[in-house]
Image 1 (spheres, helix red, strand yellow):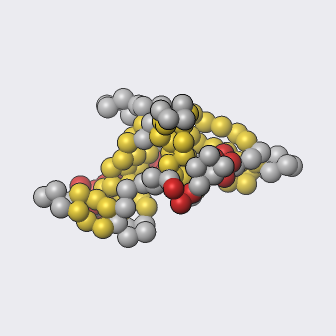
Image 2 (cartoon, rainbow, N blue to C red; image 1 turned 30 degrees about the vertical axis):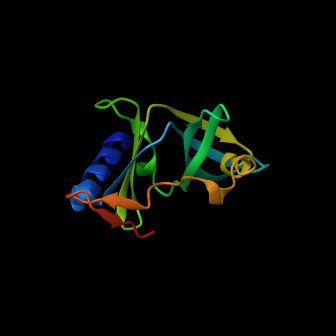
Length: 143
């Protein structure tokens, strides 16, 4: 079975097990799949970094990041709505993040860590901490 069918199948299963109101939906301006290597050229980890455009700084600023623990977490082209889509189980909720753009990088430094010079981690917007229930009420997201 191809990796694409495995990814789509996993997403369908995850979404099927969780009602729509248990999906944390987000939009960011850019997603980056980063492959971080050590000095010997060995892969240390893969991560997805989520960015928002900052008109004030005229650059993309890190909003959040997640280590890739399973290939199904990787963003894929969203042919239906356009752009890119990442869907994965994040703690007790399914997280669905859309972006109009995506890039992939291979580095020997951690771009998320380097970004902390511009915007400290504690000042980032981060991904949503609450959901909107079926009737529009706030529902806390446990992480």
